[in-house]
Amino acid sequence: MFSSLLSMFGTLTEAHGKPPVLIGATGGSGTRALHSALSTAGLFMGERLNGAGDAMDFEPFLDDWINPILDTTRGLDYGPATLDRSALEDFKAALTTYRTEHPGGDALWGWKNPRSMYVLPLIHSVYPDLCFLHLVRDGRDMALSDNQNQARKHYAALFGQPVGDITPERSIKLWAKANNDVADWAERVLANRYLRIRFEDLCASPGSHLRSVFILLGLDGTSLEAAVAAALPSISKPASVNRWRALPEDDASQLTNLAKPVLERFGYAL
Image (cartoon, rainbow, N blue to C red; front, side):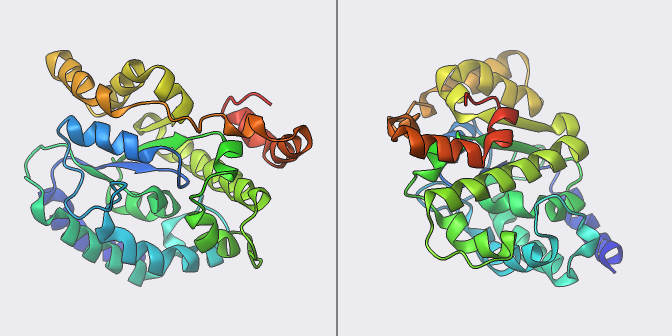
């Protein structure tokens, strides 16, 4: 049923030319800066955006479907064949609206909505050549962020237990599970169309990391250098980087221990 429904997308995806680039993350990871960089460099990144650059055309779809999907999968690494066909139909409707102003042809395009990473297998079933930019920020900083929307909305469905208050401990648990799952899926399925960037590294060496992004998108020569130059002013280091180090030692150790394997995987000091 799901595969037959995918055939309905043939004309739609062919008309869209190049496959999209998606920016995903847990909320508060710095995706706003990366969206600004791509948009400034000339990519079509949507028209109906919120203040953080999130593509709002996808919000109803994400609100309606992430939790039902997580109720079934309990993770972000899953196959689309397990999904309700209505999820694909709703994604098609959101995509059609989003693409209304797209210039067409071979114009580079994509969108930033951090929660897209919860439905990447579904999006991949429509765009198997998509590129995914996975922005990761130290989970201990994320646990102290004011932005806990993903934990508030999706913790219960992801873990199958009531969320209660959004504590730093619950926040870092979601950070670890969501980012680890999507990294597993993307490394296996997308391979060289997957680029994981630590936000801290992007702030420290923006030129080299932006260059990697635009090379992934197929730019070279003068177009590559022009894109990097245009995007550079969008990246700056916020004062909140490494805020977790101001915690009392016991509190910092507790957060570290809750996410230790994933922090190590992503290269963070323990």
